[in-house]
Image 1 (cartoon, rainbow, N blue to C red):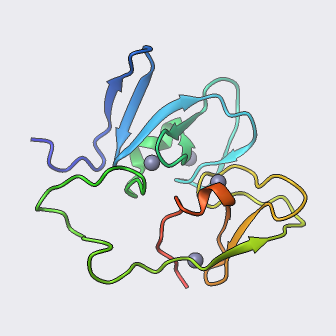
Image 2 (cartoon, helix red, strand yellow; image 1 turned 180 degrees about the vertical axis):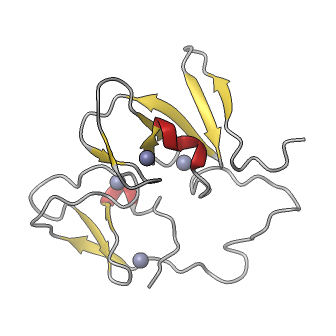
Image 3 (cartoon, rainbow, N blue to C red; image 1 turned 45 degrees about the vertical axis):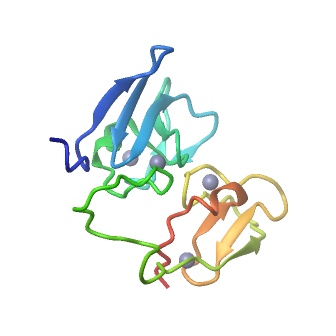
Length: 150
Ligand SMILES: [Zn+2]
Ligand SMILES: [Zn+2]
Ligand SMILES: [Zn+2]
Ligand SMILES: [Zn+2]
């Protein structure tokens, strides 16, 4: 039945009563954001009182509550659904364009291109791709989508 999960948010309930919104392989959960954060869907700030953001429990992506249903990019950390109708088979044939990350130093507040959180600290807060110049946290570089646009 549900052969095309993309764009079809499915809500499941956790044992603790919290709701998980399943979209494109992401498992979004309403979260209180401890710090300013960018929505990785609309690239605007997420702010306000209460649980304004939805964070994927797998890849740490954060989006607005109102944006989560629009997320079409597949979760990079979700287990691959084995279906013969898969439009792409990454890793098997051509390697995707992998980012060329190296540790970087930022003098201005910079937000992670993956999870949307601020890159914290004073030195080597994150890594930057030499190709497309995207900046992400050290902890996010493995999760960052490997589609370098350079
Ligand atoms: Zn995800
Ligand atoms: Zn948004
Ligand atoms: Zn990050
Ligand atoms: Zn790149």
